[in-house]
Length: 444
Image (cartoon, rainbow, N blue to C red):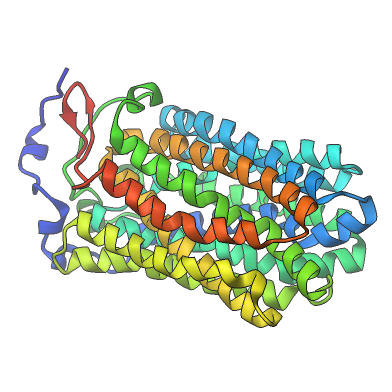
């Protein structure tokens, strides 16, 4: 049944792009919320990336094959696929505050548990539990962004908090080798894992709905709620699956997330195998890669938001940003042929930057195409699709490496998927029209 508009909705502007720019509060508590999302995403990636930093040393000391290492990471992807789908719906039902707290506590404990593992099977089990917990981060963060930002700011806010993934990937190669060399690799997992629990002390007292926050001014609340609002209960993911808009977001994540996870889990091993980089020297090249990715995350989100602010349609702005990112991702195919380490690092860093800019816009598509009450579930479906792609990529990467001794096939696949993703998104949503998700009711 179609929900009738309230008087406040009826008088709301038909599009957030039509609002007077002078109504925008330049500062406000919404950016504190964005900072919390940035911090949690940073912690998420420190915990996720610790294994990638230590992989060459662990492989030597514990005797893993490349296939076993690929399967360890595939277990993470499998749990991520399961958890992403479940957490998206869970967060839509219980709310962002509680759902995010549960996710972070779970993944922090699982990250610390890596320090107790002594075999490939043990690491696969810890990795599986980490994937379940970490799958809650992005559904919760995207839902929080939809709750706290109007449409015209969401891509930029998403780019900002998504930059935490790169900051985490920068911090990990700086801190983890020092922890491992000083106290052992077990201590590195324990310290980085349990540190995430500190975030809960900030999140629980600070986060809530904008309407109930004592730190939100009337002007900021009016800006946050300047888009037409649609009340209603959370929309189950089963009701979202028939819509091609859902599959547009899912296809983009299925095709491109595996490339990002390949960079995250295999870059350290690639540099060690190809250029002889050891644990003492792994920090600077990995830091360089993810500093570039950090710039790409912010720039990609800023670009489409800037174009929309200048009068572009959301359709044109998002797709132009996605296409530019796809162009910059392609040269990574040449990384295994690079004559020296820093040339390879530059190519991987450029692709990582392109991925993060691409990802910021892909996440924002969900809030463009669906109402806030469905965003967590849509991101859950899309994240599951990306994780399924990650399972295939991780399992194949280890076996291809064992069989051929080469990284070239994986880098060629990683560099080519973004153009295909742009094409898929365009074919499924030619005009980026919001999905009719509730018996013909249009989403936003």
